[in-house]
Length: 126
Image (cartoon, rainbow, N blue to C red; front, side, top):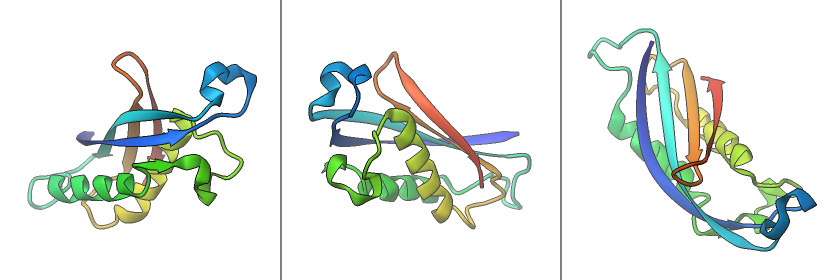
């Protein structure tokens, strides 16, 4: 299995509902380093899994829809705690819609790094 990963970042604001979140129930900011890892068992005719430049642009486009925004105000997240896990799934799903034609890619893993010691990932088929 071949894997190619591209990286970008996003900065968001949000708050959480539920006592488990303690002070994070108040509005706060978060900066995530975001990795998108594309995998497939074969390389294309050019000897690559996918065009890294195109994958980088797609990730930047998806993150641009979220960055510098208060996610509490986004109707797409109404009634949802925008946890790191939820955001990883959101980015993966939005990338998957745009990833057609990138190459012989079958799987996508999106990882949001909350800090240098904590991160969450979401994996899906393409």
